[in-house]
Image (cartoon, rainbow, N blue to C red):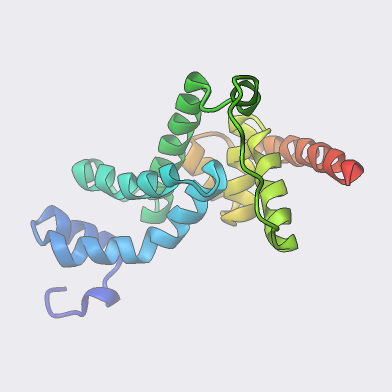
Amino acid sequence: MVNSPINTLSDNELVEMVKAGNERSAFNEIVRRNKGRIAYTVYGLLGKCCDAEDIGQEVFIRFLRAIENYNGKYALSTYLTRIAVNLSLNELRRRKIRGLFSFDAMQEDGMEIPALPEADPLDEKRAIVQIALSKLSDKHRTIIVLRLIDEYSTEETAQILNIPTGTVLSRLARAQEKLREILKSYREKV
């Protein structure tokens, strides 16, 4: 293991290296292997925002702080994705509590909201999908992101969310139905 190039080591070998104190290179390799998948999950749940990048970084910080708790029962990517989902859902709850911005209230207060520049049709479609996702409940949004966007298997999704596979399947069916309804209302407006 010591003589192997870092990128040929298994995830569990990398974790053991970090636990043994060889943090820098082993941890950097863990981040390199998993940052894309974590980014997809966080952006899928939160949309593209400054909070998403912070939460993506926080996933790896939390993992490093609690690395002794990782026992290898699940794949490292599954474990990290579970952290990402939990942090993202916490952020969504904080947003709901804060109420973030109410553009209607801003306009009522006399604040002018600038017009958006002309957008690319593909960007508009992505924005509509992101808005539709944001209208789903947290549990339905999470299922859609993990199964359809991040392409985790039903079993992996069940592991990440710590729910039975049957629950994943039923939530996925219900979430797709709700998403279709939401997107249908956008098509009717256009």
